[in-house]
Length: 373
Image (tube, rainbow, N blue to C red; front, side, top):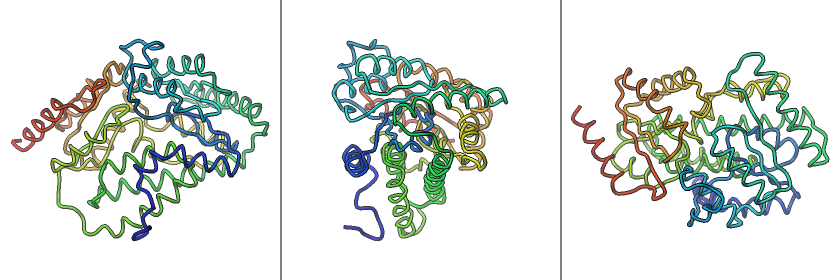
């Protein structure tokens, strides 16, 4: 039953049922489905070939299943993903595409391909800077991917088709940015809902996702008056999947209004420009705010400072995964930026057990410290 324009399912339910939704879509259109391991994979290119991109994402009930293929000191998200693959969770995929980011995920890609043997696999390597030579290199990298996709799908690359796919993803990102804006203006949208929205943007057909998101935004107009004034937090880290942690933080009387994570606001900055679609696509992926694995500290600082100002951030919570070298290396630098701006922060380093009582106590202590300032 639809109420006040809301989708029949919540974003959390949609993300949990994305395989069923994709299966229905596949039966209607015989659409190929390709898994992605990183937000730097150019999903617009895959979509332009009639492929459904699906982000490999989630937690296994038994990450120890990956121990036969991965060292136990690899970060928990990578071990979880390998375990999900070994459990058959992603047997419905026709292929897999990754973009070089951290060493752990690149190792995961190679181990996945060797052991699970997908029909199609490709690793994209993007430069870490946006100079002219980097743009030419990126277009060459995309050209290699295009050649492999043409062979795999038996379909010729079409700039017009890419332009249509770009328009869809631009619309999806603009709508998602609007959800963040609504929350920043005080409407009572939980960050757990926003996180589920971010996951859905990566695992659902973009056409279906846009329809659900429009309904969500229409319903948001009816959520009532703005919530009371609360402290405004930014959540920073790599792969953050623990809904209990997000709900607990907001349950203490604060609002998570912005983030700097592998899914979320950082992916929504700007849009793919007009002009020749392949060049515009390459320029977009080169110039968007970088993640920690790209080690571009000036750009990381610029994004953080601009986000702090735009969203009126009062404090930052860093949530890092055990053994995540890029983000753990990035943290002292970003903390220095926050200290300079006189914005308090705290760091949580999570392991396989996830959100524990100790983490709850530390968050409560941090809030108490803020109250005494």
